[in-house]
Picture 1 (cartoon, protein in one colour):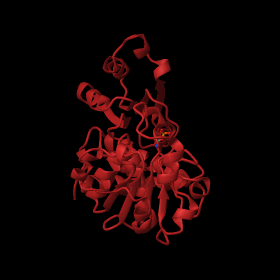
Picture 2 (cartoon, rainbow, N blue to C red):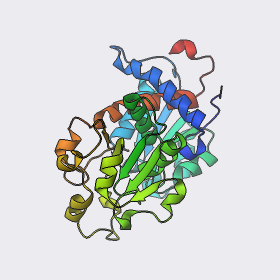
Picture 3 (cartoon, rainbow, N blue to C red):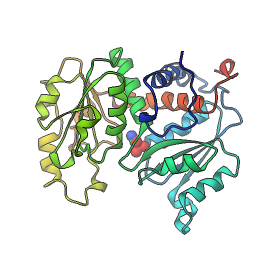
Picture 4 (cartoon, helix red, strand yellow):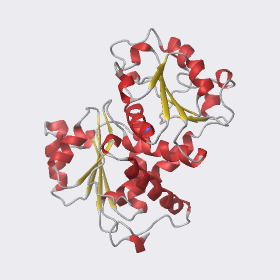
Length: 313
Ligand code: CP
């Protein structure tokens, strides 16, 4: 039996298959807490969790905050507009000053890849990566894997298609690490200009044929077209992209019978997916959001040390 020993969560590439399994199992027991009338357990009473977000977020920030509160931790939210980074202070100095107030976990989101690693190397507090640049978004991938396992019973042997802006997607990168480690066959699909060079080296297949991936996949993860990262004109137009790679009901009629439609959010309806697919019978997009709280509860609980706390759950 593998024991949890990690102090930070920076990406899934740092975790073994067994460690991913521990997170998914722990989340299963925490999911029930959010379904109770009183959605709270005392497991992290007296601990402090700081959300340090330098990029916009709805799901991840609120989900971490709810997760921490449901474990009875104290929480603080800091955004770019409220931090001294705007006055020239480095992110590490800002984080060291926050740590000096005896906080236990810093959850960080930043537009530059590598910021969570810099903080983890420079701080005693645990650091959780809530999304860094185009690099990684480990908690999104974990909640995606949790949702797939819950819906389809397992991950090994499944065919998972990831469609869209692979080049800029930290969600795609973390999912590729996690899903291939758990034995899924992952295929990526998108415009050639939005496909990273050497992506095959991560163990995935590539196709530029949307209908092929729709017909053969058990799970389709649709990615947001990251318009804020399209300064270099990777596409002729958004309309062209939607026509070539957008998933709508008409295209989806060729999918497997119980295909799962997933999306990390925020969705661009009419671009990467149509409204009737987002709200349709195969969509588990809101269930992903629900499961995000359980996954983040599990991660906070594991990182802050579980020894002697079992009776508190
Ligand atoms: N999936 C995700 O990271 O969403 P937010 O940007 O709203 O946190």
